[in-house]
Image (cartoon, rainbow, N blue to C red; front, side, top):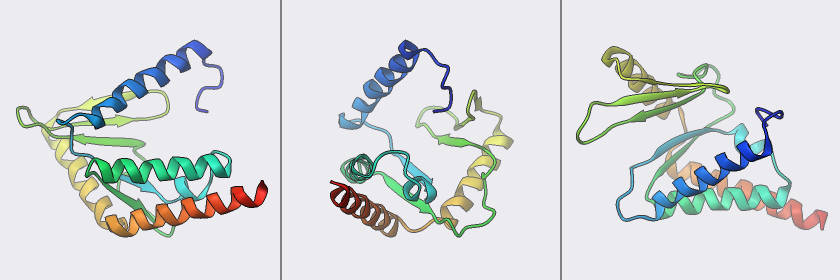
Length: 156
């Protein structure tokens, strides 16, 4: 947990807000989503095996049902674009210039200065090129989910 000192009510409020935002994916008009995750987020469990299997299965279902794109950046990748940037979101709009959202552990910042947006977009493009293809990425997640499911059954 990033902030173990956070009040339970504050954490619960954030969880409720995230659940509310998730409804966006069930609407007819939804954003296009392309995400790149580091492989260690799948291979180094944050939850017990059964819950990891459920989370990974859910990720695959969301990606497939929303026609989104997910890529995995392999653990073997050494030195890659945006590795020091925390979470980076490149947002494009049909009626406004693109914006980048950069988020760290305790803060976030929107960037709309065109040269910086261009730099972030180029870096993101290079990161996409370094990641596994989408089909291979989903296969890797499904394989990891099976492994966690098997591990959970062995522990039962």
